[in-house]
Image (cartoon, rainbow over all chains, first blue to last red; front, top):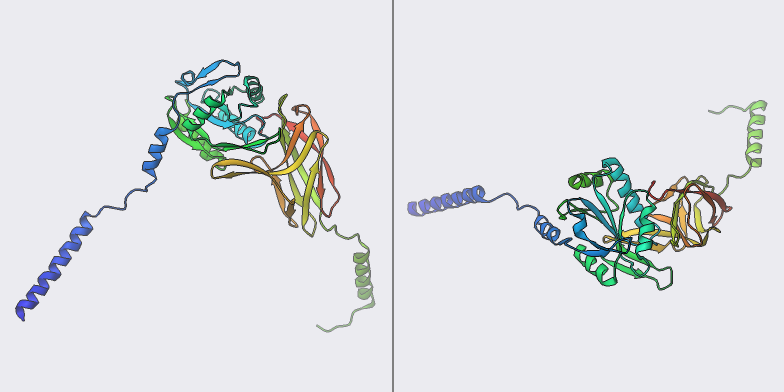
Length: 198
Length: 152
């Protein structure tokens, strides 16, 4: 009987020791899972591209080297979201300084947006905007590099294009840093722009 | 609490009731529009958007049913939205209800008037007339102010 009691106490001791060891060695909860995939995602955004500028000349992304930039994909016939996004970027650049970052606008509608159209459209904002277009193949490639989606809506002459709404922020080395979504506040957007701004 | 009304009180009350009965009926729905504006456009740009705020100062709900202007080939009520990160734009089918006392904003990135088939560009500093139509209120014609594309 005494032996059994001793054995039971020994068992209790073992369990207690095991629990203590578990508490001591177990780590705090793992960091939120999204950090790793986001890093992987970031490293895949961007890369070298060649498009066509408003003069009709080839435009290589190497021309952007050494300058941080905000790049947005849209189309010149876009009545609401595109001019709103560009106006917002223009306003924020005024606040951060004219040299703080470049604004790059890439057409996802090259069928209607030739160099002339993209050039005139950029001038509308009365501040330098690098307007780019290209062949459908070039546009498709750069869209893929930035993970941009676009799709024609309607078949009439005045068709609309649904497209990725976010602006991509790239640092001086052409590395992706963050996106700005339309629903984000001006303060949040400015904080992100300060991370790339020169 | 029981006391008799004096003749004067009766007369005062009576005339007040009479006045209330004769006063013009409070309009069922009373639209008030402010701050109508549009961004400037360039030659060749066929589409643009116009914005405004609309308040219902009446006592019943107001329904915005349509819009027209001679400045564009067509004008319609539209809504921009971001759906899974993608900017979309669709007609506002069936108009828009505004509750009594409610103010709704037609603003960038949201509800807007879609102007299509622009014959000539919208020039900064100019204005153009636009008419809002309602289900149970008289239409309102307002002047839309054209501002620089990057201004607001």
